[in-house]
Image (cartoon, rainbow, N blue to C red; front, side, top):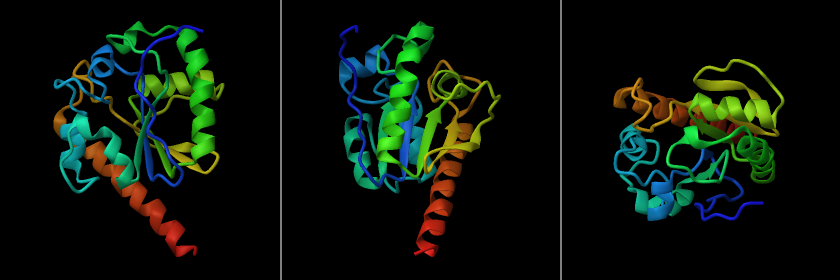
Length: 185
């Protein structure tokens, strides 16, 4: 197995959302933070969506866990761009991700982009379904799945307003699921 430096997972029991990237960028690994590239639109979109309730920067990625939000990736091997990943990376990473989701059972696992989610379906779930953005019918254990557009600057087909919309929808989904749980107690 290849040795490499990567970003740590920020996972814990009882999280509302685990944000699942395709893989860490080489830049993010160099600076030591998720979505560390200043050109990446994640932090601005997350902040504008109101999902956390305050503005955060990449250097505060580890603090998101106190807001019930964690981080991990489909593949942990960093590349300059996700296009540098090979099928072998997904074959190795997807079953590991599935086990992490089953172990930690967040309310929602939110995939950044259909590319990573489709790879997860293929290599982690043995499925060739054709998903769309938003809520997914599929669950992993008790964890519901959601897909937002990838906030990478390479994914220019989605505007900042589009990204904010999808993170807001993610927040609404979390609230609905939490109300169902709270109402059942």
